Amino acid sequence: MSNRSAPAPTSVAAMYRALVGIGSICALLIVTAYLLTAPAIARNRAELLQQAIFAVLPGAETVRPMRRDAGGTIGPAAPGEEAAFHLGLDAGNRVVGVAIEASGMGYQDLIGLIYGYSPARGQLTGMRVLASRETPGLGDKIITDPVFVGSFAGLAVPLSQDGARVAHAVEAVPAGKRSQPWQFDAITGATISSRAVAGIITASTAQWAPLLHAQAGRLEGDTP
Amino acid sequence: MSATVPGPGSPADDLLRGLWRENPVFVQVLGMCPTLAVSNSALNALTMGLATAFVLCLSSLLISLLRHVVPREVRIASFILVIATFVTVVDYLIQAISLALHAALGAFISLIVVNCIILGRAEAFAARNGPLRSFLDGLGMGLGFTLALLCLGGVRELLGSGSLFGIGVFGSQFEPWTVMLLPSGGFFTLGAWLLAIAWWRRRREAGARVQEAN
Amino acid sequence: MPEQSLASIFLGACLINNFVLAYFLGICPFLGVSGKIATASRMGAAVTFVMLVSSLCAYAIHAALAAIGALYLQLVSFIVVIAAAVQLVEMVVRKYSPALFRALGIFLPLITTNCAILALALFQTSKGYGLLQCLVYALGAGAGFTLALVLMAGIREKLELAELPDLATGTAISLFIAGILSLAFMGFAGLGA
Image 1 (tube, one colour):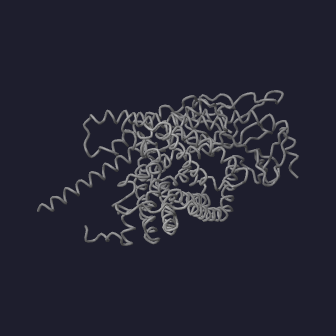
Image 2 (image 1 turned 45 degrees about the vertical axis):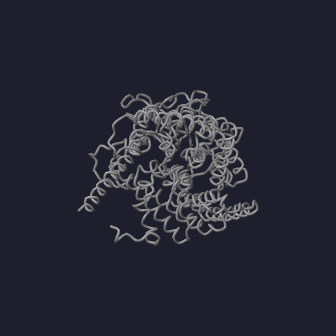
Image 3 (image 1 turned 90 degrees about the vertical axis):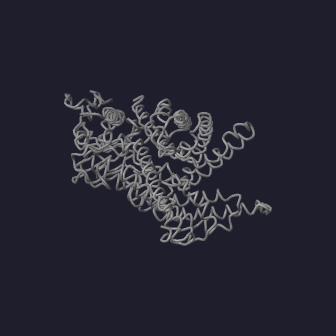
C-alpha cells in the first residue's frame, strides 16, 4: 500500500455533484418524515395543552383561544393565530375562568406553568407545572405533590380598590404559617422552587388580573 | 469460547460483536454524553438507545449504499448530512408517538447526531462494506449501546426512585438515593460498571492463563 | 424572550447548569483532554471561541428558517455551520499561531463532534434568547466548560503521583472524580435566586 501513489484528487465538480446529490436525498427524507408526522404531532400538542387547561379550570366544558392585541384589548383568537390565553366555559356557556401560561427562573432552570384565574371571583382555580428541571425528589415536588398542586385552587388574587393592580401578591409561606387567603404552603426542603412558582404567578397576574378585570364584560359578552 | 463465536466477516458476527465484545460504551468508551444524560430512568434509557440504534442502522445502510459515489475529500461532510437527516426523522417520530417521552429526552435526541459512535461506525465500517453487513453492524452497535444504557438506567432508577420502568420494586419504605438521579449519580454508576467489567475481564484472563499453563 | 438578566444567564451557564457537570455535554473531550492543565485551558479557549461563533450563526439561521417556515431543516443547518465554524477556527489558528495549532493537535477537529456546541445552539433556540442573551449564554457555557476541564486536569495531575488500584486507573477514576465535581457544583444551584 505504501508504494502506491496517492489517488488523483477528485475534481471540484465531482465534489459539488456528490454533496448536492446527497443533500437532495436527505432533504427528501426529512420533508417526507415531516409531512407524515405533522398531523400526529399537532394532535398530541393540542391534546397536551387541552389536558392542562381542563386541569386548571375545573368545571370547564369548552375552551376558547383568546388573543390580546397591542392596545391591550382582548378578543377571540382567529383560527391559526397563537392564543395569548384560553377562556374556559362550563356546560351553560358561563365563564369558568381563563388559563394563562407563564414561565420564570426556578432553582435549577426555567419553570413553565399554566394557571387558571377567575376574574369574577378574584381567585386562582388551579395550577399545573408544564416544564421544569428542578431537583428530582425535592424541587420536582412542585409537579408531583398533589397537596401542593391542589393548594392553588381558591388562592386569592385581590385587586386594589381601583382595580388597577394586584393588592397582595401570592406568597409561599412555611408550612403551618398561613394566615391570609393569598398565601400557600411552600414545600419543605424546596423553598426556592416554591417561591419561584409564587414569583412566576405574581408577575403574570400583575400583568393580566387588572386587564381581565377591566375587560370582564368582553369575556362574558363573548359567549353567544 | 472461540469454537462457538461466529467467525469475523459473517453476518451473525456483524450483529453480535456490537453487543458485547466491542460494546460502544463499555469497551470503546464512545458516546458518553447521551449515556450519562438520559440514563436516569430505564424507560428513557430504552427509548434513547432504540432511537440511536434506528439512526445508526439506517445511516450505516445509506452511507454504505453511497460509498462508491462519495469523493474521499467530502466524506465526513456527507456522513454528517446523512446522520443529521435520520436524527431529524427520529425526532419527528418520537414526537408523533409521545410528547411526554420527547420532553423527557429533551435536546439529547438531536444530539444523537454528534454521538461519536455513529460517525465512528460510518467511517470504520459502513464506508468500506456492503449494505447488508453495514446495516447489521449498525444494528448490533445500536443494540449494544441500548444494553449499556439499560445497565445504567436500570441501576439509577432502581436506587434513585425505587422503581423499574415506573413499576415500584422496593415498596414505600424505601428511602431513594436521590443522588443516583442527579448527574453525579450517572458518573458514579458508569465508573462502577467500568470497574466491574475490568475486574471481570481480568479474572477471565487470569483463568485463561491458568488453563493454558496446565 | 425570557426575562433573565445577563448576569443570571452567564452564571447559569457557567456554574449552576455547567454544560459538562450538569448537562453531560462535551464528556469526550472532558475525559480525553483533561490530563494537563495547559492543554485543558487551551482546549477550553478554543471551544469558547467556537461557541461564540456558532451561537451567532445559530441565532441567524433560526431567524432565517423561522421566517421562511422551514424549521425542520434546523438541525441539519446547525451541524453544517458548526462544522464550518470549526474549520474556520482551525485555519485561523494555523495561520496566526502555529505553536497553538501544534499544541491542540487532533483536538481541534474533534470540536466538531463536541456535543456541547450543538447543544448550545439547540438550547438557546429553545429558550428563545435574544441576540445579546445568546452571546452571553455562549460565553458562560464556554467559561463553564473551561472551568470544568481545568479543574479536572488539576486533579488528574495530582493523581498521577497517588497510589490507585490499577483496576480503577484511566476512565473509571476520571468518572468518579467527575461525579464528585458534579456534586460540588450542585452547591451553586439557587445562586442569584
